[in-house]
Image 1 (cartoon, rainbow, N blue to C red):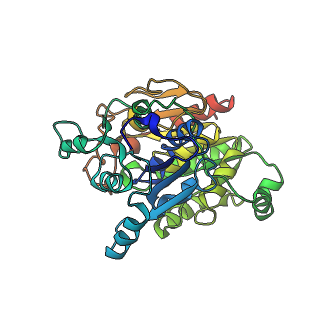
Image 2 (cartoon, one colour; image 1 turned 180 degrees about the horizontal axis):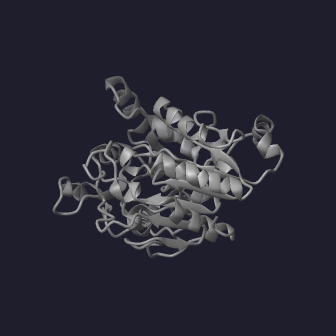
Image 3 (cartoon, rainbow, N blue to C red; image 1 turned 90 degrees about the vertical axis):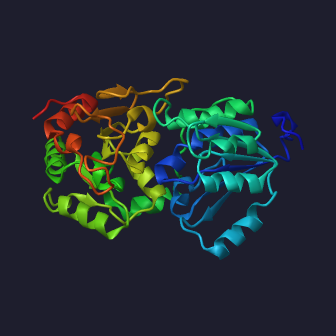
Length: 370
């Protein structure tokens, strides 16, 4: 098969998309996946992800098969993956510039399209082993648009819609949680990001939670299954009204997406769940500190332009996403906190006042600030 993308046969094409990063990154590849599905409706379209991120693709109608591998594979894992991938596809698309996605693309298909490092970076030579490539831009191109650039290389029209995970049995979820059955108005707060340097303050979450309760909204706290996250969310819950619902560690990503989609409002930090919330269409308040919003802001629902939805500095509102940025002079530094490690605090977030967030709530809900 030659390197001309038109040689792909629509009814027999086999395509592999490689997306090997965190939960939010996997979700941000779904516009690329949907674009491929629309261009090749009868193709076999598989996705390779880390095992702990596969839940972000649950029920995705555009995917035939999800292939998973551990974050730290052993020899047996590599051997199994080699058997699954070796020349099983016509086209492989690597959405990250790292070594493993590049290697897997080499193994999987004769036609390879990839994001590659810039010429002045380690790994610049990877471009010579793929037929089509685009350089990784970590500063001035949103991740969704970075992925969609790959489509231009194979003449596939862009689709800008994110696809959140789909719950299999919504009625069972309603039976499990009475607040869904009661159709109560509620807000979802997701206070715990994966890394400390993206955290807001506990006091801030409590004050905003109490404000939302005064507005008549029931409070729903979400969080992952890790024990430190469960403990963190429980600490906040204990400082909020007794009827606050704590979902930390109790629901799948698809179930959480369904719950968020029914909410009046979602508030969260720079984390994959905030990207997920934005994809459901619910009004979102995203709290950002060191992270560059040009590259990593939540993708607003209904946004369909080939330009970045957010600027680098300042609080901004685009469609269903209100992004609040810390106001220190250094934001966005794009570093791991003030001490430049994942467990560091970030002054820009520590100094972010609850009043600022309450004003955003007022703007999103049309209420007056108390």
